[in-house]
Length: 182
Image (cartoon, rainbow, N blue to C red; front, top):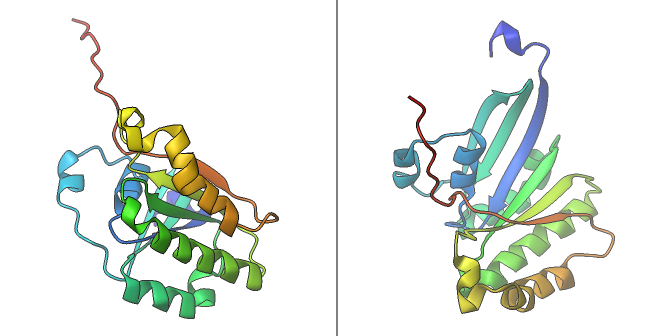
C-alpha cells in the first residue's frame, strides 16, 4: 500500500457460495474491471483468493472463497480463522442453477448457524446472481416462481432474528447507445 493509503478505512468482505455461482465475476465488477476478456478467461477459484483495492478512501480486503465442496467444509472447520474481523458477507446463489438450490441453501444455513453460534454480528447480503437482462421474462424466473422456488426456502432457513439483505444481481447491463459529441 502506498503512503496515500495511511488514512484509508479498511473493510473485510467475504464472498461465499457454491462453485460457478459468479463470485469472482462479482469481485471483478466491484473492482470496476470492464475488460470483457477478464470475465471470459475466468477459471474456478481453488481455495481462497484475497484481493485488496482502494475505492473512495476505503481499502477493500475482499476474500473470494472457492465454492467446491472440499473447500466449503474447510471454511466451516476453520471458521474463526476466516471470519475474524469481517465487516460484510456476500452469499451468492446462482439463480439459474435451479438444480443446486438445495445445496446452496444448506451451505447458507451452515454459515448462518456458525455466525450465530460464534455471535458474529456482520452485515449479511444474499445475492440472487445471474439474474441477467430479460431473465424475468422467462416463465421459470418470474417474481412468483423465484418467490416460491427460492425466497420461501430462504425465509424458512434464516432465523427471524438474523438480519440480512436480499438482492437480484447481474454483471450484465442492457445495451446502451449514446451520441458522440463532435
